[in-house]
Amino acid sequence: MDTIAYNFHSLLLKFSTYSKSPFRQVRFISSADRICTASSTTLRMAHSHSAQNLVIEQQRVIIPNKQGEKLVGLLHETGSKEIVILCHGFRSSKDYNTMVNLAAALEKEGISVFRFDFAGNGESEGSFQYGNYSLEADDLHAVVQHFSGGNRVVGAILGHSKGGNVVLLYASKYQDIHIVVNVSGRYNLKRGISERLGEDFMEKIKMDGYFDVKNKAGDVEYRVTEESLMERLRTDMHGACLKIDKECRVLTVHGSADEIIPFEDALEFAKIIPNHQLQIVEGADHGYTLHQTELASVVLNFIKPALEQDKVAAK
Image (cartoon, rainbow, N blue to C red; front, side, top):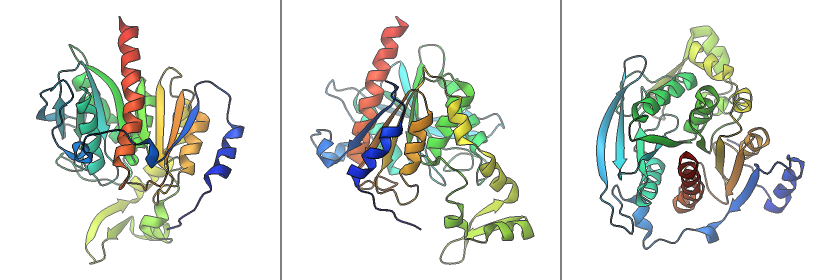
């Protein structure tokens, strides 16, 4: 897998070609921008309490998708009307540390959160499928519908890695959520395949109709069918992003040292999404292994004021 080193001063020159639209913003986040917390372990706690001593309740919630499969999630209930939905990445789950830490950071600020497993992942029903972007956007729609209405408003959706693609696809298709956070999503879905499947993956799939991905011990981890591969290749992120409503505020966050998806993909999102902010976390890898606090800070600094703006506008 290629690793590319960038000079941040030369990188800034790339933005000189961007539109001068007031909606487009870019910022680099370094370790000096860490949020102030009493203890770094606060973000890693399953339960967190704000300065107002909020009582946080965690509830296991099961939501059927349109195929009738049960999606399993965990609701961090703070009593807020607004709720933020978190979407995990490829072959991951709601219990991935980034999902857990972001949920803790948001609930600490009194914001309710729901993190769930897509069908075929984690505790949810269904078979794992490679690709599956459109169906995962539909899974997210089932979750949004479940929490919409009454005294509840889905204020924002956030996705990491493949989940970042899913929230952008959702925004382009359904246009009912106006705060979207894409954390390290991939712009060009034709890339990154050979790194996982090998250079001759297409020949093998054409020959057998599928390709089994094995671990170092030789055990099959998952199967890639020709149909699922073609679904990924047909998924057009460029076209989808052009359909996102200009009133939808989108934040893209990406690590400068991402070893899975190069942060140049984030620059492409910034060029085409109309109402967009881009923040690069300096030194962060794909999983924000050593930069969970910086990531939480960036997300909170975007979501909190955006939710407040929506509250005022709704009055």
